[in-house]
Length: 61
View 1 (cartoon, rainbow, N blue to C red):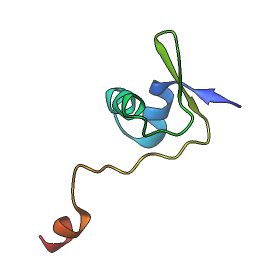
View 2 (view 1 turned 60 degrees about the vertical axis):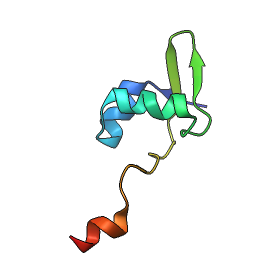
View 3 (view 1 turned 45 degrees about the horizontal axis):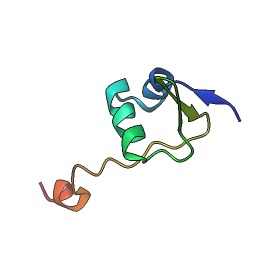
View 4 (view 1 turned 90 degrees about the vertical axis):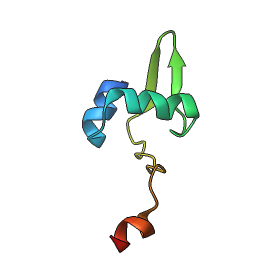
């Protein structure tokens, strides 16, 4: 399986590398593996949904 780093995933998904690390620590990226101090993310992994806001509430504004 091909892997990418958190920085590469951040660039691919348009978010910060810190946010990608938070997703990894929370187990929200399927099959992400930690090797030493580095998280390896599957190249075909999808960006997890951002659960910080309610989409229905945002639409009403």
